[in-house]
Image (cartoon, rainbow, N blue to C red; front, side, top):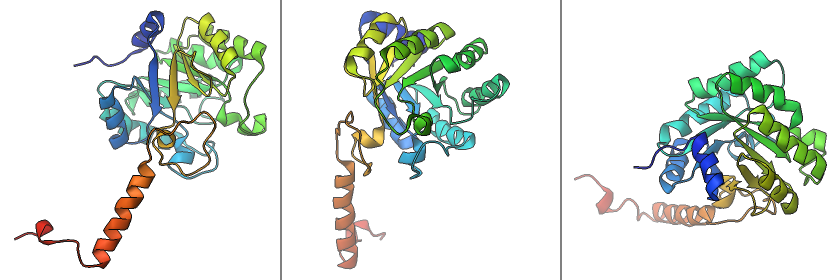
Length: 263
């Protein structure tokens, strides 16, 4: 039986040049599939607001909702490292409040770490959480919680700022960093410079690992998909066929047949 993935596992994978796989999940059944498949990181992203709840942005997701979904995911995992995504305004206020909220992910939801968005500006939070024994995954580049400030979901090209953010979050104590919506050459420079793993999403193949939203890559999400998403399956198409066949058989009196009746 494989050992559970830890922060040390990820650091060693980077050192050995082994790629890291990561996906989002929001409930027990999908998390179980990912865990059994051997995905190293499962992120319970605040993307649940858009993917599961049907909202326009990630901003309305609450701490209680994040804890609820993370709890389901954690119960399914014996291999994957579970990371809880800190919702908007759960860490931007006082450090005490940030520690309290981050601690809930570990204490109540069974996560091994938390993720939060931001570069140099959130380094005091990263340091405070790390000192409290809470591992932190940073997230720089295109940060969805700042969608209004950024004027939309735009590729981030300020190389100097991105490199500084990456160095700063590493120095603050982050064990890894998500690079989102960053041109590949810049992401490659960041990856080569840092000692901690980089997890890319729309940041090219040179990152130490990759993450996608599960519902996007298996074809469940019917919303607009960013350029960086590759669909590896069409579960919505398969489900549609099954549903249509079920409707046909029920209306035609074919289901349930004798094979599905109690004697």
